[in-house]
Image 1: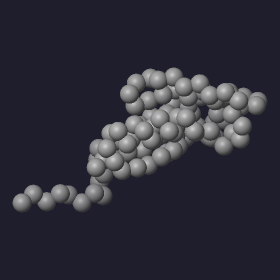
Image 2: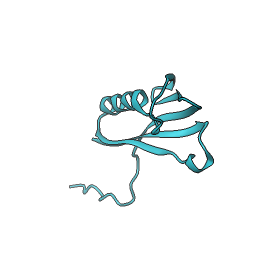
Image 3: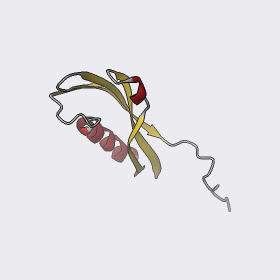
Length: 97
């Protein structure tokens, strides 16, 4: 089983202090489970806006979406991406027989 994270990277409308990428979901599973978590995240992520008037979702590829959220006073844009863990320096090596 692989480890995955879903990231939301602010690209538009967010104050400089909030420009850091956010881990929305972290999970272990197969590619299908990870893709389902990505779709769930892009359909529910709100950045704590309270009421989202409109949600626009643009598919960029198999593992990324551009999400535009229209709030009461402003519009925000996020790149929501799925990432698979490919290396962990603290992981125990798998012993070979």
